[in-house]
Image 1 (tube, helix red, strand yellow):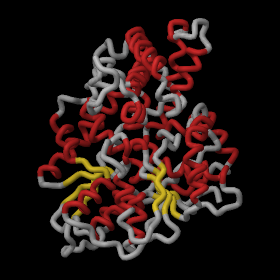
Image 2 (tube, rainbow, N blue to C red; image 1 turned 60 degrees about the vertical axis):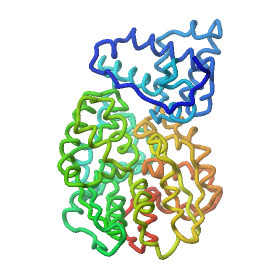
Image 3 (cartoon, helix red, strand yellow; image 1 turned 135 degrees about the vertical axis):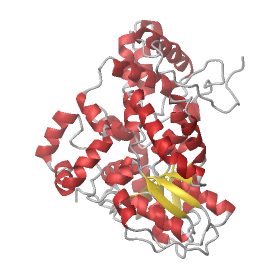
Image 4 (cartoon, rainbow, N blue to C red; image 1 turned 30 degrees about the vertical axis):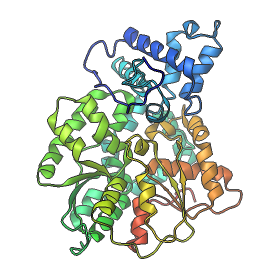
Length: 456
C-alpha cells in the first residue's frame, strides 16, 4: 500500500441493478467506510458544502469521531453533493486504483438510488428533472412561461416554490418558441469549402438546454464550424439523463443512453464526430453512460466519438488549423471553467479556444459556481449555492469585463445573479454566454438570440 496515488483515477462500473447496491444498510455501511477516510484526511474541506456538513457532524458528536454519528444523518451530507466530481478528479488521493477505493460522488449517487427506490424523491424534484416534457410544453406558451418564471413575478414564483420546491429568488433560464432542432431543419449556415478543416463531418447532440432554452449556442456552434469548413447536422433523440442521474433514477438514465446511442450510431459509422454542446451532457456521453450500461457496444462507440464543443474546436486548431478570427473582443472576457468540463479530464479547452482571439484579455476562473444543475435552484439549496459560488461571483465582478462566459450555461446565469451582490454600482454584463458564442462574435457571426437578463 502507498500513501496517495500517482496513477490516473479510474472508476468502477455502477452495479445499479444489483439488489445490494440500493440496499439501505449496505449503502450506509459503504458511506460510513468512505466518510471515515474523509474524516482522517479532510483535504476536501473547502470544495463544497458536503464536506463541512460531514465534518461538523463528526466534530459535534459525543466522541468527536464518526462512530457517534447516526447513519440517519448521512442524508444531510448527501443532500449537499452536486455530483460535480471535483473531489474525485482534483483532490482525493485515495480514488481507485488506490486500495482505499474512495469515490465520494458515486457513493452519494448510490444513496440517491436507494432513496429513489424507496420513493423518497419529492414530486417537485421529479417534475424539474423531466426536461423534455417541460420543454415541449413550455415552448408553445414561451412568453407566458417566461413571464411566470421571472423572479420579479413574486406571486407566481411563490406558487412555483410551493409546488416544485424552486426557490423564488433563483434566476431561471427562459424558454424559446422555436427549438434548436426546428431552426436547424429550417436552414444551415453557409460552409466554407476552402477552409482547412473542410471534409470534417460532425453531428451535434442538441441537449435539452440548447434545444428548448438557448438555441443560440447551437446556432453559434454551427456557424463557427461552417466557417471552418465542417459539415454539421443536428440530432436530439432525448435528454442525456443528467437530471435523472442527479436524482438516482438510473433506470431512466440507461433508457436515455441506449436510445441516444442507437440514434447516433449510423452517423458515427458514416465518419461523423459527435459534439455535445453542454459539458454536463458531454460528461454523461463520454464517462457516465459506459458505467451505467457497460455491456452496450453502441454506448461505448458513442463515448469514443464524442467531443465537447470547445475540445472539438481545439482539435481542429491543432490538426488542420482554424480560420483566423478577424477581431478580438473589446474589454476582454471573464471565463468560468465549469466543473463538468474539468471532470472530462481534457484540460482548459475553452481557455485555449478563446486565447486564439487576437488582442483579447482572458481572465479565467477555475472554481465551482455553486449551481450544480437543477440542484442550485431548489429552495433547500439556493442559499448554499450562492455561498459556494460567492468567490466566483466576487472575482467576476472585480474583473469588470463586459463579456462573461461559462462552458455551463446554467452556471453562467447563476454567476451573473451572484455578481449583483458585488456590483457596487458597476454595470454588469447584459448576457451570460457560452464561449462558442464569443467565438462566433469574433468571426462576425453574431446575432444569435442568447437569453437576456430577464429581471431588468
